[in-house]
Length: 541
Image (spheres, rainbow, N blue to C red):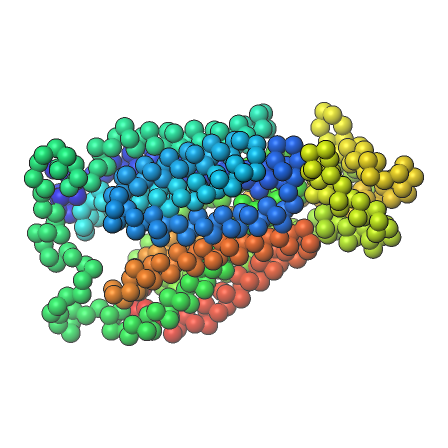
């Protein structure tokens, strides 16, 4: 008998299908986060990529994330009404394969077509594989929450492995083979789901295909488990505290939560853009910024269970905070993490670059540096040449190109050679010191970034996992679908606002991190002020 057709007490251990979906999702997330770790640096790369500026790369990244997080609305609806969950996931997997494969093609048309495939693939795959996990268990099963914990670990194992492997592959073979490896991850994901399809097949569809009568589910034989319809007759005693709250108050409370979510995702998802740039340029390690994308999933895996234990410890003593209080604390932690990074940037910006540092250093001219050089007296016509200089492929020759030392020469030698292509020898001699000093990329210990991620991840664990659960508990039943859609819309808007990263090359890094920290801090204060009315609007949550 299928797990879906048993009673809650019949299921004593996790079905094998959970581990099938664990592997399916782990390899899908490996592919997804491989792409995110590579993408913005790939667009900026002057050799394999397209020599885009960080602002251009960040804009495309923000738009991609917005569509990625909105796409499950359509993919989930199609699975519910037309396709079924496993078929939808398989379709999404093939679109994912195509998208990652296209990114291995060195052409701009391939990038845009790849992004379209990845958005479609995510819409079909992401919401429905999660639904399939829940469908393995009967209503009321005490194993379901634990199943999602196991499933969530699969997500983060894939997310951790992706940047580590991409760092190795990219360093040895370049960006395009790395994207091909991401595509191969999806081949494994889809292969697992296809090979073990009987373990996760919808029981009704499986019974029909085998010519067997469809067995009644627990929902069919026990009307008390049908939770989506309001009871027709309940006593005053049976009405829960949340049901006594007027619908409009519950909706307003959720709108406040959605506003918090918008700011959270705007700040948190800097990890694939500006935090990757920081790791690539300003972190003193011998790897690229790609590897930094492994830090967050590492902390998720490390901190999840201690945090769960801590909440249980407080709950046993009747002191566990409410969900809105946890979210306020989480937002405060997000703010603290970016204040922490802002201080690290201030320390770096305070370093005085001198001739002894140039030989081993790296250099980058961007919009912020051009402003510094203008103040140093470098003529506008020279700065204009620097800004517009292109190589034979039409890529930037100097602007936003990173000059670093390797076996072919030191960073300052390469930088000086590039300057000599747009300036006379006399001009290079006259302004070289200003260019080197103002373009020098300061570096700080990687511990600043690692511990900054630890703090923001702790905030994430108090915000992101709580959200969907909160919506399902607080939303009036007749508006649950609409308000669940509102959660995804708020998430998509927040990801669109990661576009604030276009100011990375204009503001000081310390100022940029400070602005993000202040945005999170203001929302934490707003949430703290509204805690009492929120608790009245969502009692017992």
